[in-house]
Image (cartoon, rainbow, N blue to C red; front, side, top):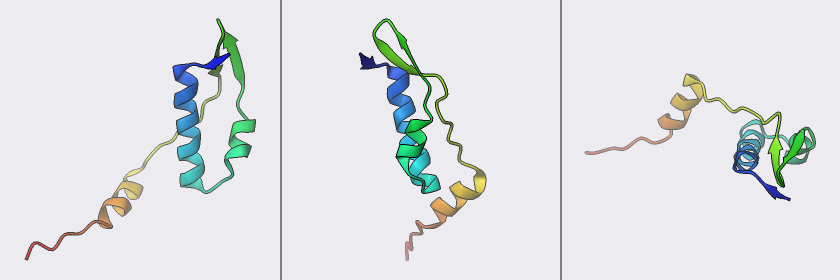
Length: 68
């Protein structure tokens, strides 16, 4: 079996979620529900990651340039 493109994306989203929420990735991976379709694995409950305006503002405020 191989990972489907959807499962690869789910893996990247799981990694992003574990980094942003500072949780153990093994806990998130163990929650995955997998399905085999024609030799490819799919994640039925892939995590979602969202970035709110506050988070984006905090990230961009760290980069200030003094042009003078």
